[in-house]
Image 1 (cartoon, rainbow, N blue to C red):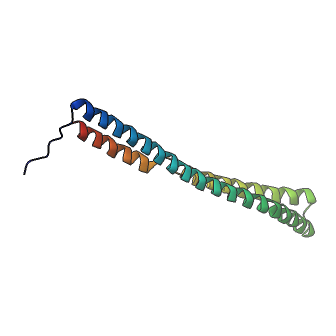
Image 2 (cartoon, helix red, strand yellow):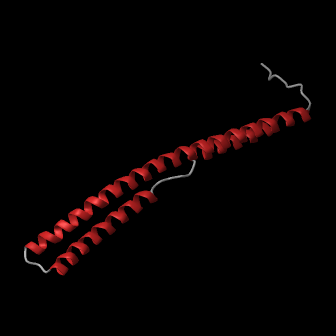
Image 3 (cartoon, rainbow, N blue to C red):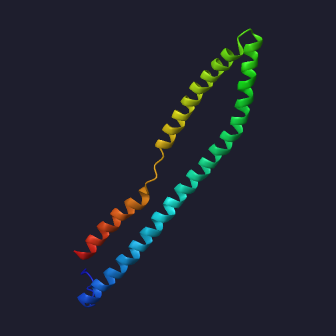
Amino acid sequence: MHAQRDQRPLGQLFGDLAEQLGTLIRKEMQLARAEMSEKASSLGRDAASIGVGAALAYGGVLVLLGAAVLVLVELGLATWLAAMVVGLIATVVGALLVNAGRASLAKVDLAPRRTVETLRDDAQWAKEQVT
């Protein structure tokens, strides 16, 4: 069998190629926007959940810390010393939680991986069309 030959003029072929590449680039940009929007939306929901949970936990922790100070005072510790012990423990636990949260957020990958991969495929396709 012999390959079918396109009878269009060279100028029209390059015009069609330029049009197809333009369409392809627009579609890739739409894909990148959709992918980034999806990741940003997920990140926003997670951040809102963390914020609401932290606000509720903050009130509860303050009450519990006050109760811990009162327990230590009842056990015979001076009020200032009981408050200092509870404050130090709360500060250390809080710092550990902040560091764990920061480490988790640092692992979030915001790069549009699928778009980058399809752009590579598109570049290869365009090279094949020109040769």
